[in-house]
Image 1 (cartoon, rainbow, N blue to C red):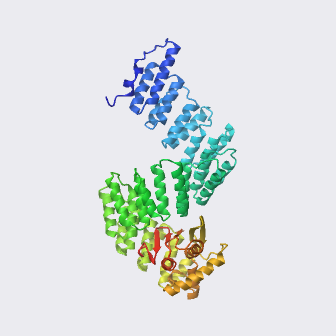
Image 2 (image 1 turned 90 degrees about the horizontal axis):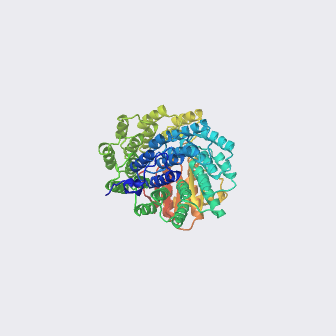
Length: 605
C-alpha cells in the first residue's frame, strides 16, 4: 500500500519491548535497530514515528541515541530545526557534537543569529569548541557580514590551538573575504602549510566578494600551474563571474571547456552562470545556445536570459522568452519584470511595456517597486514622451528616488528639453547632492544651449562640494590579456604607436564623412582644443590598440564603466565600416553591436 510508513514495513516492530532489567545485549540490539530506521527516514512524519518508538523503548536517554535524533532532524533535507531544537533542549548534558550539529543546522537553514547564540551558550556552559565548530560559526559570520564577531572568533581559534587546522583556515579566509577584509584573507592563505582545493576556492571566492576580478583569474592560474589540484565547480563559477565583469569571453570559453571536461553533468546554477557570462561579454548567441540546451530551467535562468536579451536590445525575443516561462508554469517575480520592462525600454516597445506594467499589477499581483517605475520612466523618456514620464513620476504610489528622476534627466538631455531637465535636476539635488554625474549632465545641457555662465556655475558648485566624476575607462581584450585605457591615456608602453594609429584613423574617418560632435566637450574652448580632447577618448584609444594587436576582420570587444558619448557612438560606426570589423561595446546600460557602419541599437539609446 502506497504511503505506508517505514515503521509498518519493518521487521523491527516485532522487537520485544525490553524492560529496564533486560540484558545489555538486548538493549544494544534495540538501539542499533532503531538507529538503522532513523537513517532510512525520508520525511518528518516517519521521523516522528521512530522518535516515538525510541521514547517508548527508553532509549532516548542514551546520549548516542539522542545525538543521532538531533543530527537526523537538524541536518536532513526534510528535517525541521524547530523540532530538532525541541529534542536538543531535552538532552541532559549536550556536548560539543550536539552543539556543532545545531549550529550547522541553523547555518544551513539561514537561522544565523540562532547559530551565533548557540555558540555563545556553548562557551558559557564551558563546552570547548573544536575544529568542527569553527567552520560553521565562521560561515555564519560571513553570511551576516559580522566582521567584529569574526575577529573575536579568530582570537578564540588561537586560544584553542586550531589556527593550523585547514578547515578552520578555509573558514577564516571566506569570512574575511565576505566581510571585505581581503588583506586578512590573504594573510591566512599565505600562512597555510598545506592548501587544499577548498583553500583555493575560498581565496578565489574572497577576491570575487570584493570584485578583484583580475586577481581571481591570476589565482586560478597559480593553482593550475602548481598542478596539484583540479579546479572544482565553485572555483570555476567564481572565475566565470570574473570573466563576466572583465568582459572577457575568450577566457570564459576556456573555463566553459574546463567545466565540460571535468564535470559530467553541469547543474542549473553553473549553466545559468555560463549564460550570464556569455550575454554580458557580448556573445549573446552562445548564451542563447546554452539556454536552449538546458533540460531544466528555473526562474533565475529565465531572468538571466531575459535580462541578457534586454542588454542587447532584443526586446521582442525577451518577450517571447518571458511567454515561454509563463507557459512552463513558472510564476514571475518582481526581478523578472524588471528585465521584461528593461527589454521594452531598450527596444522602444512602448505599448508592450505599458501592457506588461499593467499585467504585472493586475494579473500577477506584484506591486511596482522603484526599479519598475525607473524602467517605465526610462521607456517613456527614450521615446520622447517626457510629459507622460513626468506625470507617471508625480502619480507614483511610492516616493520617487534620485534614480527615477535621473532617468527623466537623461531623457531630457537626449531630447534637448532644458526646462524639464532643470525640474528633474532640482528634484535630484533635493534627494542626493553627491553624484557628480548629475551635475555633468545638467552642465552638458547648458553647454548645448551655449549657456556658458550656467556651465561655469555648475562646475564651481562641484568644486565647492569636492565632487569628482569617476574617470571613464575602457577595457579591451587582446592576446588573451585585458587592457585598460582612460581618456587622454599616455601610460601604455605602446603609447606613441597608439597615437599614430589614431592619427591614421582620423584621416580615413574624415574621408568617409565623419565630423566630430563638439557638443560633447563641456568646456568653453576653441574648436581645435575640443577636437583634440574628443579624439583621445578611452574607447577610441582601445579601438586603435585592438586594431593593431588583433588579426584582420577579427571581432573587437570593449567594456566601459560609463555610458558611451554620442561622438564615440558615431565614430565606432564609421570604424566598423572602414576596417570591416565587428565591434561590440558594453557600456553601463547595454550592448552595442557595430557592423558595416550601423549599430544594433538603431541609434535608439
